[in-house]
Image 1 (cartoon, helix red, strand yellow):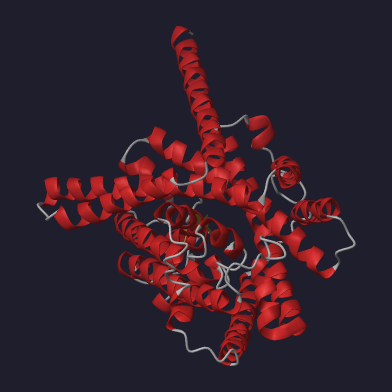
Image 2: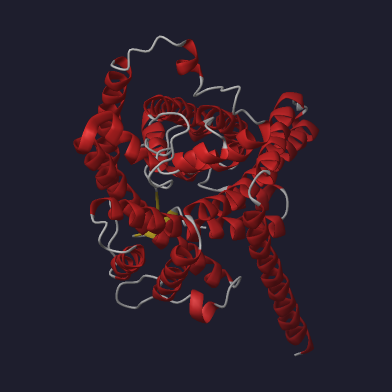
Length: 452
């Protein structure tokens, strides 16, 4: 856990409580990115058989239940925390460890899918360079910059988010103008993006919804700001829920207009960068280049940050003894970064980007995220029951909402692809094996100390 208090000149120095309610919401939107559904649009479109809006809205329902649970846990544990903190404290340290282990998979997969998408977007600009060379370039770029200790500042992230907001506005204007010039008065034309009877399949929609969860990944990061927020027990829960709502509404508008612009049934030039092809149709080469470039810059920033975040998480697990300390718990003495972890993740990103598709990487990321969300929902229900036992509060409403979140997330988890569930289960099994090995080692050390 990151320390929130330091000693300086004999006095305790704590983080400054300077973040207001609107600051927390802005932070959450920047963390998620206002263009979140654009990179994964083509995959959702294919899996949901054209019902992207419905998939986004169903995913919003699941995330609102989970956001409620996160808010309750943030109120109960006002110190900056996360899913593994809540699950470990409320349920059991072993379950908290497994939640953290699944989160580690998410951290590692994020730079991987960013590398895949960046490579596809770069091909849109320079198609003469083959995909494998772009993968080598971006995987190397993320690794080299992180080895040099280069980090994007909050000011840069805010500027990127503002730039993406402008790009979204330009797309909306171009899309509305394009749709207006189609001169169609068919009611079905405007309702098909939401519901098309000819292609609707409940299984396909739920399959797309399990992928659309990626649109909301990151809202839980608001809970880590409890030590810097005014009245965190009140503002943190509200900010988490409102951030999910804003993201869902914005994402629904983006994908709805995109489906109106692109002719139904026509294949995309490239599934992973489908949205930039839609931008070309709506606004011509200029909007295509602007959209492709803006998303590429945002994805590069996300890939860099997530790789360093994954390296730091592995470092924390190495320091804690959950992973071999000599390798994972070491720092570069000059730049003070977990160099071994950065290099290891860079190698995984390079190999994974060449071996798997963007869709598989996305589903694997959601595998870990949905498991963590399920854990938080159960922890929230247990918290409500415990509050009822100790303080006599009515637990019915919070327990129903929390367990509803668990059921919905579990259902979406079941709708992930078989390959993703198989690979994710292998990762979870490896985590269990490491935890058992660690317990055995600690037990052996205890016995040696007792004998001596």
